[in-house]
Length: 453
Image 1 (cartoon, one colour):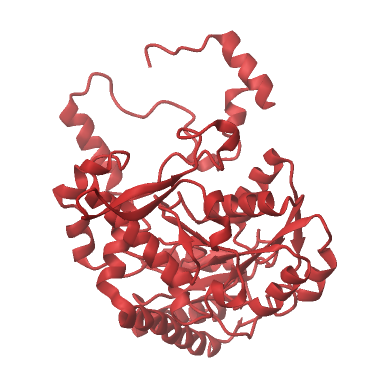
Image 2 (image 1 turned 30 degrees about the vertical axis):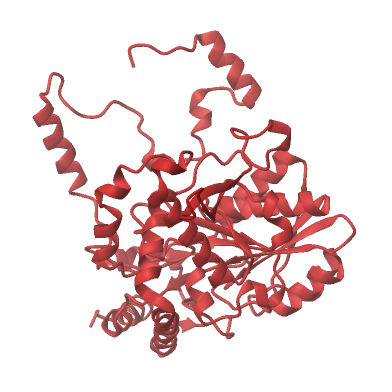
């Protein structure tokens, strides 16, 4: 930029408040291989067309899910997206719709949000849902804050089996709010150790979090965890894969006060890691603590049905001290896509989608169990993800498979419940029997020094 408003003194003062010595320190968390240490290798004085040609050439080196077979999961999944989703979401009526602050000119947008909220209430069984959240991680963080505020609790218990990205976001938020985070360890079965969870409970715990299925793919004993929370008068917050709710017990059935999750599998591409689509629903008594917006149905002075923003609990709309959150927007476009997707799917299609995931997970188990050097450390039921324990490092297999056009899964060496030989593998309705067999063949070749079939 030719003009930067901050003087060197401004920069030094901000860095001192943040607690770092230099601007470079702000980016220390980024991997070295993605940090630019010198200007782009481009000649000076290029025309617009020449610059675009260079960028297109560089972009062509990227490989996405149109050319790779993905077994990645951990919260984002390669799912089938009907062409009608983008066709409808891209219509001019939605692209040019005005902000929902003025209902007289935004009935279409408001109706879509209302229908999205209705879908989320039906999927979770809870009473009220908001207009959407940025992603599953921030949705969980907001859910923990609202339940702690309601119980006037001082601490939250997170499971060791919780998605590590969700853990980091919650910890960051809790640190800023002055709350304490406790961690319930996992048992040998890859699920929350319920006895250990009970031992962490005291009068200061206001919230217990459960992820189901958990990050290792295991189905948690949600009833036992809910009983512990209920015994100690703590709220239970459920972080769920929304596709799994078509075949698993829904949050309302085991007494969750709030349900959150990532709705990306509902018609939203993984792209290169976002944007995503968080959702949140809660019991009726907590509705006034929901962050963001809630759209309601009403009738105008002529008796015609319509939709309006019913609750707006963010700072921009009400006094700061009464705001429940500073969430400034909902993921309108992605919520629209998910609403179109669910409308097309219907109740029967939704159940069939969950069953398709279960069938492919069972096929993956059978295929990899036949490979020498692969074991399944957690034998319990799963939905569409599982951990494979290899006889050699998982990182090596990921590189081996990537060279052969397969994104093999997530290396768990840095996860609290995992080791360097553990690989988290996901299958969705999009994976074919041939692709699953090919992954097993790659495992056999890597672990047993064979040629790839």
